[in-house]
Length: 328
Image 1 (cartoon, rainbow, N blue to C red):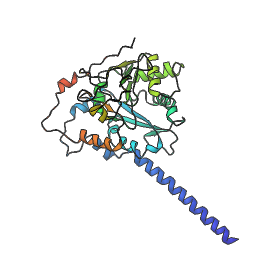
Image 2 (cartoon, helix red, strand yellow):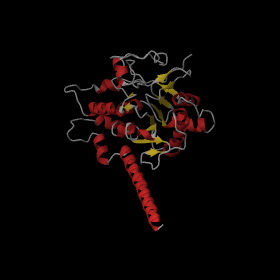
Image 3 (cartoon, helix red, strand yellow):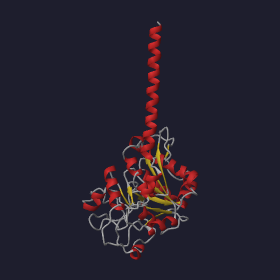
Image 4 (spheres, rainbow, N blue to C red):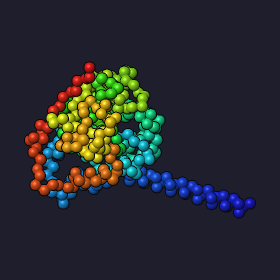
């Protein structure tokens, strides 16, 4: 009897120890997947003394407005897509948050919302994000970028676009689709940005007054409708040569083509591939896998074509801010 009891005690102790070890390992892996050290962050900001780069203009843009980048995602992507995003472009934002439901413990840059998981609940999740941002960060940032965990953002070019606007005005910018609403809506995959005033209006005049849908399959459609219901207009996201700045498809499709046939009816403006596909100050691409994300980041930030200098004066006039009128 004593022998059997001893075996039970030993088995219980081993089980508890194994569970504790698994929890500790999950906590460590979760934190390492999303959090970067200060040294890593400094390298992201180009203080590497071996890189011969003058980023004075890019640094100056940071004083024109603070940008919070946020991404809705799921826990199983922590060690793949989220890790790639967190080791590349998102560190160039002034702040960032990953919204992942049901994650416990939570890393420092993750917020777990009380919403049901799944694609069909994405609208409810994003509505919860808007409410969270309103209550916790409305006065901390001027601009809010909604990205995807497989989007790549050139943050400096995003800042350039946003600097053309006043965050105290209701502004909403991204890749404009024309279906499902006469004002259209910005593609969620291409990422979209909205001003502090837009966030204020969508929560106070929209969700608090039950003027906007809080459920639905297509979050970008519902968010677009809500923004327009509260007086936030869609703004131009093409340069003066009519080249797109926000891109909803993978880079290879935009650059090499062909554009899928089902994409053409969706676009407010005709999407083309090839040399005219993309603005010189492109902001985003979608469907970028982790390996490609790291390659793009290296080519953009650690590679220079010798002897080629951008014409900064001409670039400053590349984008013309304007609201896009609704379709008749």
